[in-house]
Image 1 (cartoon, helix red, strand yellow):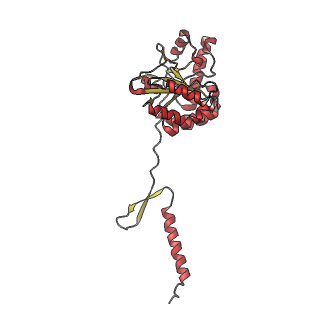
Image 2 (cartoon, one colour):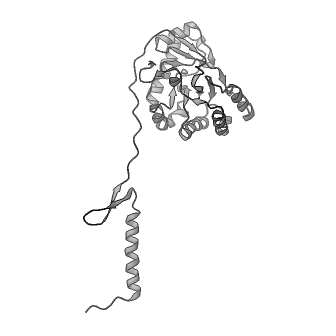
Image 3 (spheres, one colour):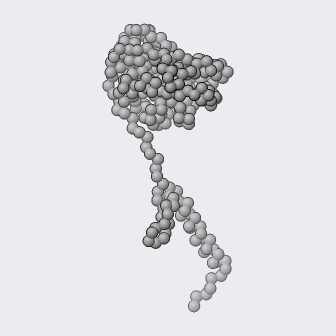
Length: 277
């Protein structure tokens, strides 16, 4: 007849058994789903993976058409388009990308390919936001030169080169929108752009006026002045002042019951076609 277990050994075995059960319950990626109808044993199944983001649409061909210059959107629906140019400061680019990801706010970026080092690290975050229609990217030329100083070939190269960079980096075309650097353009430049499928020249009706360094007080005063229904507002990813103001800007937008939208949403255009729907 086997010798009886001593008390310490018995307690030790019980503890080991309890630990094994707890470890099984804590296995990563599994959850209790109930009990098996025949055996009464617990049944565990893998947790449901997150749904993948929607795919980006294929890059459409250009659709040349007459050009329109737009500075303001419709005031119905209390929509506002927040646009962000350039990208000279990596910290500010990262801040705006995080702002979009954290809050779900809809933004339109107008980057220059010359600042690839600042933008490219965020492609993995931006592509799903672009695919979901939360973020749009428009053409602001590759080097941010005054287009009035360039030849016809030079204007075409600035727009085509920047679109190629955006397609390579973010997987989407910038057509049909372009914003001329400094807002400087002519009917001739707009006609050249329209031949490439850039049928909307985008200016602005409000601005944070932060292409140069400004104080937080100044930027917020500009926001108070210009964040109104229908406004296309201009900001820059160039200087860090705005980084400490995102929450206050959101509070202002909410207090005025404004609805931030992309230019596609404001004017019913499409990334899938690169033109009006």
